[in-house]
Amino acid sequence: MMKETKRVFLLHAFYDRTGIREYLEAQARKGWLLDRISSFGWILRRIEPRELHYEVTYFPKASAFDPEPLEQQLAFQDFCEHTGWQLAAANGQLQIFYNERQDPTPIETDAVLELETIHKAVKKGYLPSILLLMAVSIMNAGLFFYRLSLDPIGIFSSTTNLFTGLCWFLSLLLSSVDVLHYFRWYRRARRAAQTDGSFVETKSLWGFQIVILVIMIIGLVGLLLSLGGNRQWILYVVTLGILLFGMVLCVGFSNWMKRRKVSAKWNRALTLGFSVLAGFGICGVMLIYVLSGIRHGWLDREPTEGYLYNDQIYLAHQEDPHQSELPLTVETLMGRSERDMEKYTYQWFVEESLLMGEFQGYQHSRRDHLGEPGMEYTMLWFRWPLLYDVCLKHLMQPRHSYSVDIYGNIIYDEYKAVEAAPWGAQEVYRLYHGDYAKDQYLIGYEDQIIEIEVDWELTEEQMTMITEKLKK
Amino acid sequence: MPREKFKTLTEQMFYILLCLKNECYGMDILDRVPAMTQGRVNVGSGTLYNLLEQFLEEGMIRETKVEGRRRSYILADKGREMLEKEYRRICAQAVDYIQVFGEEET
Image (cartoon, rainbow over all chains, first blue to last red; front, top):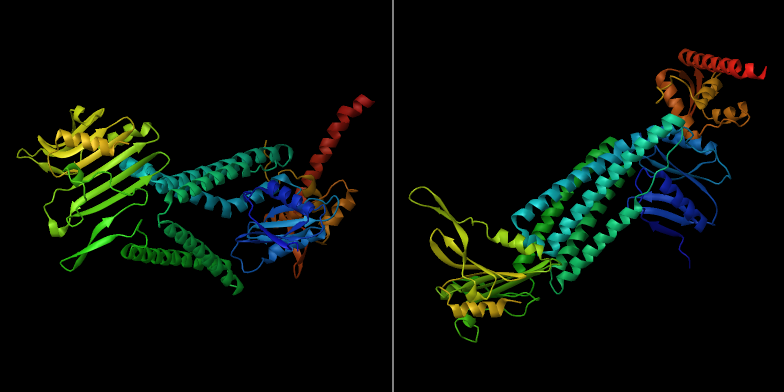
């Protein structure tokens, strides 16, 4: 049985009357007539295929919050009906008419006037929204680059962070191009209308928008695939679900106000207030969910093990599904083969993106066996060679931990170059606090960097073993 | 060069104002203009609606009757003045045309 209605999501801009008209006329030839415009797509209903003329008009005085069409709007529609133009659908300032006559007089026959009307409608609703999106995108893209400057390793190694940055960048690109495209068209159209009375047809950006959408989808698929067996995909799905629910709630609230015939002014104000409250409410619910998830281990990469000490539970073991074992342990460096689970806690995390990967391993003594030598290390590997220098430079920055000597000089922790031969590496740096050498090293290989901190003075043998175990 | 609003009238504006010499429903202008011009000039329904609003704002026409959504209008003094000014301009153009081409033909 053939469907009687279908829902479509148009990528045409609000002011793209030419593109919208051409699309709807093509649909009419295929047997679909525009029935209504909803907040979640345009609904078309089945008709006999036919040639129909469509016209997209704008009524600046109208608003999406109007409980019913304005008297002036109905008068406008009466005028249009007089020349055979039937109202197909209206939403806010947008009104779409169709005509079955062979060669109907267009609804707009004065280009200057038509342009004025479009510009008024665009200035009222569409432009403020796009400019707001642009401002938010600039802010978030700026924040992303700021975070990148503070923690390039965390950003480049995380598919989630890269995807977030990509989304804000694409959002900024899309909104900027849209605004520029509109004003470019408006300037040309105004010049033509005032010079020779002609109307310059609008041009769609949908090809560009499709490219942006495809890039976003590829990014999203890449993000979901990178999660693998990680249970954090639950967080993403729930977040998306909650956001969609929030949108439906706010649209539903506005529609409910319309049904109660609340004026547009009050509807707009109350819907805005409701949206802000709903936003806070949703953030609160998500925070509770995330905290519960962390407390109960729902979002852990793998179930963690704990141990009891002084009536408190402490983490004993936490692993990442991307790596089955810690590649290097204190026991290995000390010449022992078995892991000492009674004395140590073991944790490791892997974060990997298209650009680079980061492995963090931690081994510390349990609270009931304090004093055992511990170890922490980070391995970075690069698919994009340029990142080697970026990450090395970041790791080499003077550390926040500092002291003040008797002369009032601030002494920071800083890496200084040391002999690389025992490590079999191309460059090695050791952390110093003034003249005091700490047991922390930065080792640079061709496409890998390792940072390791231990609780004892390493022997050359152990340095060689570290390279053997950790170098990919 | 951009035209100042209502400094000169377009053909559509001219015929709309002409139709309102006598009281007339706004919608009826849609039929009167093509009838008056033997189909040479057509005014779009949206254009007519917007122009009537603008003429009303400028005081070129005034509302005489309101019957539900149907409104009738009539030319105001300012509108009559502007129409006359436009007529004189067109006549001057016609005279200039005859002076130039009329001489060649004679």
